[in-house]
Length: 281
Image (cartoon, rainbow, N blue to C red):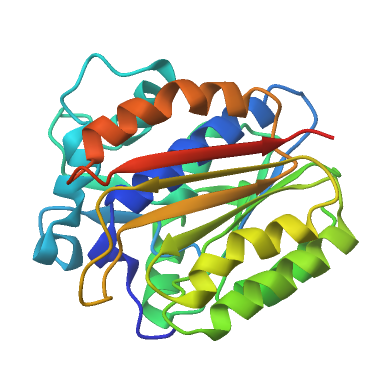
């Protein structure tokens, strides 16, 4: 949606879950020498100030990365994620939150490639500026990420990770995600795809994980984190989930160890919980 600005939500509990998964996917997929292509369909601005601008207005990060920032007792998987945030805050104060593209840049290698799509004019301009010195490794495209995904699949190296995380502010995004995944699996069945979605009181949100599961022909992993009970008025974000097609085999074990700590750290009421399901064919 062209009015959506991710900066309002940078570093919140949904970002934490999404980026915890992303860090581990990148860690595991870059263990092989062959080049990896990373595709971000809704890349945003790349990096967000937490001291001023959109993120400072509601300070959603205070109930997300803010609750993990000073902890030294985190499981390895969560500590790795926090270290990626520390990499853009070298003075030790939490001032900046890295978006998915920046995290991907930090964890990929010279032979890997990033293809970043962002349709919002201001966001794509900020993304271009953020990666202006990245060279050939990174291509920023001011276009619809769903269409962009079609254009780059299959990647030349036949190794790819796609992150698909639209705003879901319009119902059409749910249909677009399903269509994009159906097409992607036909073009590149062995790719790894991470689909983030919000937990909101909307039929389309509740149905999406099962719909994605029906599309999967190989291994899949589904993890969700609820930080509070759904609001009585039916509005607001009470959690989020990530559905991964063709996950690396160690991802499930790492998340199973880390998720209880994430519930304890980010939970806002007794309804906080997580669920992790995994199918290996």
